[in-house]
Amino acid sequence: MRAIIKTEPAAGATYVTDFPEPTVGDNDILMEVKAASVCGSDREFFEWGETAQGFPMEFPRVLGHESAGVVIAVGPAVTRVKVGDRIALDSHAACGTCYMCNTGRPSNCMDMKLLANDIDGVFAERVAVPESLAFKIPDSMSFETATLLEPSGVAWHAIQRSGKDIAANAVLVSGCGPIGLLIVKFALMLGATEVIAIEPNEYRRGLAADLGATTFAPGPEVLEYIEKKHAHRGGVDVAFEVSGVAAAYPTLFDAVRRNGQVVSVGHAGKPISLNISQYINKKEITLHGIYGRALWETWEELSALIEAGRVELDWLITHRMPLGELGPVIELLSGEANKVILYPGKTA
Image (cartoon, rainbow, N blue to C red; front, side):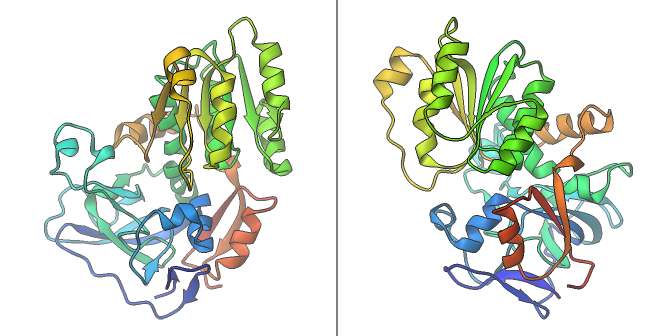
């Protein structure tokens, strides 16, 4: 089977044509991968950066965690999906038995397994995963769109964690990769008075501007603008940190007004120093974290919006490529690219 695998804790990944076929356990499903999208975290694992090193991995491991396809086999204990079902996959496999799972919060499972980290991922022709990862998609939804449910679900869950207190509020988004751009889009859709976006990449900054954001490169200008434009409120109401860059956080806490909210989405690769007295006590800022999506609340809300025609995701896709060497795809992500879709059913 063709697959892209990580073979060692070092930079790089290997494209192979003879990876062993997946083994289907009692509670597993086997999915033929129809489409897979490449995430910024895939770049982290390819480059073996600080963030990737914070997620223990056994080698070899198939990479990739955003995908959609068709169920082609099921284990004997599977009850929720059947052969022939069209599905998208979440990347978080909750255990289903711990305290968090038993109290209705599987997104914070105490024994969470991650696709492409603890379980072989989706940059392959076929993948075997626990049934719990499968989300059925309607016939009207393309496999391309379905691959984007996972990243767009992160953006929607970030909105959920902010309490959806977006209408008539000013919003700041730090980092305009696909998830950051989706937060910009969702915030404007939900009635934000202004969305301000910080992004060092000129191309992605332009995409945020096209969506309707007021854009800045990192630097003092964004705080100067906020202090002037939103002086009567004392800052923006909600800020989302999506870049995963530790140095981005001070700007967000300075930009948010008293009683405002900061939502941490990206995984910073190193600890962050925070003045608790200044920001949490005196300004009474609330800091939220998110880890994936709310299973399955996020997916149900988002798929309903897509089916109703209120949300469209395919604008995120800039490149479509067959499954092959990952290096050229990673190079694309560093330039003028947004979402790259891989097709394991096509030869490289």
